[in-house]
Image (cartoon, rainbow, N blue to C red; front, side, top):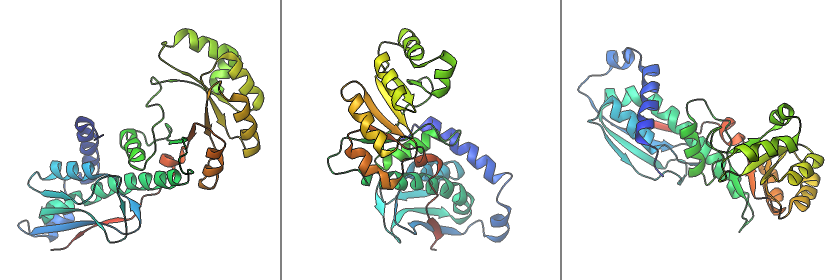
Length: 280
């Protein structure tokens, strides 16, 4: 699904105000205002491309007369040298938006690329989902979660109002897992599942006995995971979180878990290397 235009417009406008200030004094001093330009957005490494809407919106706000020609869809794997888009028009306008456009696209493509790496580690025909978390850059969750989807991953709850997820501090504040699950069950809409994070096998048993619909196994090693899956089989959906590296994904999925949530998809993805280079 495309990103909502109204939100996109606001995010881009804020970024341009931050970067442009009172103008691009270097380009305005050095470049003839009448000079036409053509720029190519190219991958400089193997990556999953993401962010075409951002490129278009950045340059729409800077100079609506610019021509933006995407050459690939978001979610496509690019090799070094592949062209993702072309920008044609005023050289001054192209230069003014270069950094903001690249900041968005390199970040989003980095998330999409890392997500694809995790998804590719799943065994063939596996029903396990790779999902993100709320560990996103403040103000940019919309973009980063979109990038996860472009990489083949799924999204966890959108915000605190989207789903009931009882975590360790809720358990402490409520006086125990049973009390927390019971209170959540009484207060939550009938359409909402009750998820509960557990740190030990004892807590897992408590959550299952209390009637949790989803149990989140936090930082379980493979041996405890195997035991937990057996105990929870048929009683609740099983989510694994914490300490999930690429090397562990296949083994975790083979145990039959439903969801693997990975905060690193958004909080630790590096910006991949794309360049916007003038060619004329």
